[in-house]
Image (cartoon, rainbow, N blue to C red; front, side, top):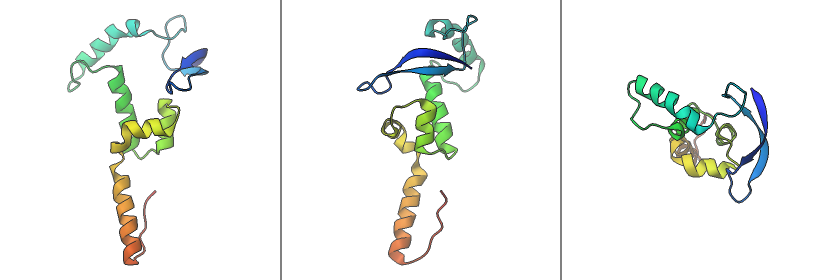
Amino acid sequence: MRPVAGRLDETNPRKPVTRTAKLLFTSGRSNPIQRTGWAYPWKKAVEAVDGVPEGFGYHGLRHYFATLLIHGGASVKTVQTALGHATPIITLNTYAGEWPEAVDRTRNLVDAALSGARLAVAR
């Protein structure tokens, strides 16, 4: 990956920062790929795969990546870092419902504490 300096990150609109980004995909000249140059190959790739809804775009791929991490057991901090969110709050506000087992773990902890039982909880 080639670092590209000076990209404005407006993930947190209250506190935009300029930072170096390591790009996975670049143009033939090692520049960032612009959305317009990626639209045609993306559309063809989506059409070639069964089960992908029509109009599935880049942002859908981002959400898929995030939920894949979450359901694989990744922490909020890990997902925040992977997505480039400025704070874990942004990640939680977007994906809180994807961590349903956390509610079950919490309920089990409280039940165990109130009943005096000892409970092993996976982390």
